[in-house]
Each structure stands twice: as structure tokens, then as C-alpha cells.
Image (cartoon, rainbow, N blue to C red; front, side):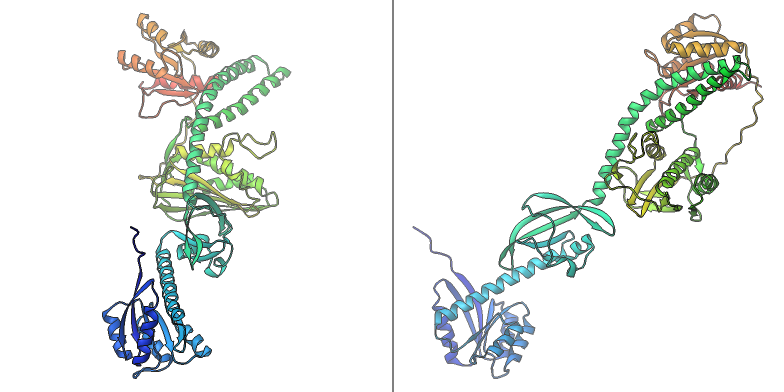
Amino acid sequence: MNAEPKQQTFKLLLVEDNPGDADLTREHLEDLPDCDFEITLVTRLADAIIKLEETPMDAVILDLNLPDSSGLETLRRLRRIRSAMAIIVLSGVADDILRREAIREGAQEFLSKSESASRLVARSFVYALERHRTEEQSRQIEHLVAANPDAVLVVDGMNVVRFANAAALALFGRNSEDLIDGPLGYPIRPNDMIEISFQKNGKTHHAEMRAAIFEWDRKQAYLASIRDITEKKQLAEQLLQSQKMEAMGLLAGGVAHDLNNLLTVIVNCATFLTDAIPEGDAKRNDVDQILGAVDRAEALVSQLLELTRKKPAQARIIDLGDTATEMQKLLRRTLPADIELVVEAAPSLWPVFADRGRLEQVLMNLAVNAKDAMQEGGRLTIALANKHIEKATEIRAAGDYVSLMVSDTGSGIKPETLPRIFEPFFTTKAPGKGTGLGLATCYSIIRQANGDITVESKLGTGTTFEILLPRTQGSITAQSVGAEETTELRGKESILLVDDDSAVATTLASVLRKKGYTVVQAENGEEALRIVRSNPKPFDLVLSDIIMPRMNGRALVAALRHADPTQKILLMSGYDDSPEDKGERAETIFKPFRPNDLLRRVREVLDAGKN
């Protein structure tokens, strides 16, 4: 047996002082079979107000002329009582002007008592009530949407924006007159998340948009929820950049180690030749060319080591403002006269813990890039200030930082290039004009100092790099001034030389023997231990490479110190492979080095502790 269709039920307040008209209205409404009406009759406006305060009603059927009120004032007074309730005016006067005014004053419908078709009158009541309910739902949705902290838009089937909440206006940086009734500009794909981008304050922003189908103003529309992901996207790109730099660092570390071994052999052998060739001999110029090439190769390898973050740092507590101010003179000589240089340091800058020499290298790299971007002249500004970061990211922690901003008024960086500028070997310069390591080196130096470096640029306007270095506790460390060299670089001590690269070992052994030392060679740590244990007399010094097969230099140090804690050791490496908190520490000299560099360090270690 089929269930009977469910009837709509409406609670109506009939405000009518004429009993005949009231009965006729009842008859009209009862004539509609698919609706049920609960009608309460009152004859005065005052009674209507009391009843509405006691009982919620779906609608009021109102005669404008009552014993205690007349005309449109009756409607206005009732509307003031219930601003969001359907009011249907049933008037004895069929007047189009009165009808328009009543609608304008808030009536959902205006019907004449002279209407003869009862079904039409009743249906008009229902239509008015349904329209009111729809409008109420739209208002409720609008209130909910307006209060939503996420950006929300209502978009019609023609992709035109019909409503925008305050969060949407703030997100797009536009007012309602500019946004509403204009095209959305993005395709609507119901139930799918799409990424959109837009310009705001001259910068590109990114957002995620999800839309759902719903009814707005009795038509199909789309409710689009939009969330700003600009910061999230930037952080993801920074994290990806960091991961790429780590991967490049692993590759660069191995390359740098092998190159430094080769350069050590070349520079020492070239120095031997220099000593053997008399002044004025044309062959000496050839050797000078070799040494010059070594210097350039060493600088390139040094940049590679910065990528690995394994180049030894000489970090200390410094005032970043003093560093920038003292660099001003050098930068002024580097920049052409048509570029204005300004250094603005806020007072009482917090101290930071960093390698001053490397930060000077960063400033120089950024200044040179700025110079290249300002071919027609311009302004380079270095600004420093204390800055508190409230929100932590994958790259940096929340807390206190010193901000160093380097801004130019140059040509700017193309948007498609900007995400790649810190990549090693990426360059926009002509072949032979750049290695693509400058900014990658800057990035690595700042990250090794536990800082962060970001960039913003706009074509035709300029570029700004911001460096954030964490605040440290303690006092500024004064720069020590090295004394003039007075140490005699000769000696008669015994040295165990450990290196798996035969060319390096042979060359260094020759350097040491020429200065009077007795040298025994070993290819790796295991062989070195066997020699030490079999040697009747301890070696005055063990000179060992760090990166070796079978037993590396750190493990050799541990074994030697276990047997003899007083054993003097000097390690050699193409790069710093061991953090401060790991492995056995020892004095270290970093390749490539010249003969006198090695001889000086050997004497320093041998003479340490002597009275």
C-alpha cells in the first residue's frame, strides 16, 4: 500500500477585523489540497504583536486597515516587530502603486480581496511562503559564509561572483564592488581541489579552491571555499631547495676531496720547480701560470666545499653591523661610481655566532650580483635590524634573529628563474661569465650558520635578499691579530706519514725530508698501527689523511690515543668530515696547502707544550 504524500504545514496569523473577509480567506486556503494551514485570527495590530511574541509563525496575512492602525504604517509596525518573517498583505484596494510600496516596505506578496479564483489566491499564499523560506535560507547561508574564517565565494552558472565574504575580499585584496558581479576567472570543477594563483600587492599568491554545487537565489550555483597556501608553498619550495642542496653537497664533497689531493701534489711540485729555477728564467713564468691556475682551482673547490658545509668554519660571536660597516669600504671600491651604496644598521643589534670571513664573502657575492643587475646605475642598500620570528618553519625555528637585507634597484629576476637561483651550477650569465656557485655558496654559508636566506624580486624594480641569523648569548669576540712568523721551519724529528694517495704521500714526504725530518710512509690506518707497534721508538708526530679505506684517520687517532694519550697527531683532509660532537678530534690542516703551510703546522704541533 502506497503512503500518502506528506503535506506541507504552515502556521499563519490572520490579522483581519472583518469576519466575512476572515472566513473567505480561510475558505481560500482550505481549498488547497496539498497544504495544511494552522490559522490564528486576531482583529487588532496590538493583539497581533502580542501573539507573535508568544508563538512563532511562518507568516502573517495582514489587512492594512485595522481599528488601531491603518495603511502602510500597519505593515511598517509589524515589520519592525519581526524583520525576518513573511508578511502577505490582503487589501481591499487593488492599487498598483500601493502594491509596489508594500513590497518595498517588506511584504512578500500583495493580494486584493476582490480576487475571485480561490485556488489562485491560495497558491499565491504558498508561493510567497516558499519564496520567503528560500530567502531566509539564503540569508542564513550568507551569515554562515560571512562568519567563515576561510575565503568563500558564491559563483553562478555563468562563472560570475555573486557573493564574497570578508575573508575572500582580504585574500584577494579587493573590495566588494570590484569582485562581486565580475567573472571569477578560474574554472569551477565541483568536488575537485584545484590550485589557483593571483596577484596581490605586486606579488604572486597561491591558493587551493574547492567548490560544491548548491542553490542560491533559487538557481544552481557553486559554493567555493578558498584557502591561502602561499606561505605553505614557499616553505615547501625552501625545503625542496634544502634537500637538493644536501644532495649536491654529497656529490661535491667527493669531488672536492679528490681535487684537493690533486691540487696538493700540483702546488707542492710547482713550488719545488720555482725554487729550482733561477730568477729571470723564462721557465719560471710557466710555473707561475701553474700556480695561478692552482689558486683559481682552489677557489672553485672552496666554493664546492661551501656547498657540502664541510669547509672548516671559524665561527665566533660578532656584531653583524660592524661587519657590514667595515665591508662598506671594500664594496665601494668594487662597485662602479654610478651605484650608490648605503648601509643602514639599527642601534643595539643582537650578537650572532658566525664565521665573519664567510659572511663577508656572502655580502661580496650579493653586491657583485647587484652590480650586474644595475648596468645603468642605481642604489644598493644593506639594512640590518633585530627581528623576532613568531612562527617556526621547516627551515628555521621561532625566536630572535638579526635581519640583514641586501636590496638593489636593478632589472630584477624573472619569476620562472627565481625558484632556481640557489641551485648549484645554475646561472643566467653567458658562458664563461659565471660558475653558478655564487648564490649556492651564499645559501650554504647561511644554512651552516643555522640561518635562512630568502629572495624577493620584481622585474624592472629590483631584488631584495634577506638573511636571518639567530641571536646568540655572550659578548662580542675580538679578532686576534697574528704575530709575524719567526718559527724555523726545519726539524730532525721522526714523522709517520699516512695517506692512501701515493702521489700525495710521495710529494709531502719530499717536502718534509728536504727540511731534515725522518719520514716513514703508510698507505692506511691499519698499516700505520702495525708500524707504530713494531717501531722500537715512538714517532714524534703522526701526519695522517682523514679519508682513507679500511681504517680512516679518525679511527687511527682513537687507536693511537688509546695506546699513548700523549701521541702528537696532525690530520690532513680535503674537507671537514666530522662534526664537533663526533669522532676523535685532532689538529687538522686542510688541503690543498703549500710546502711552508705544512711545515709551519708540523712545527706548531711538535712544539706545542714545550717550555
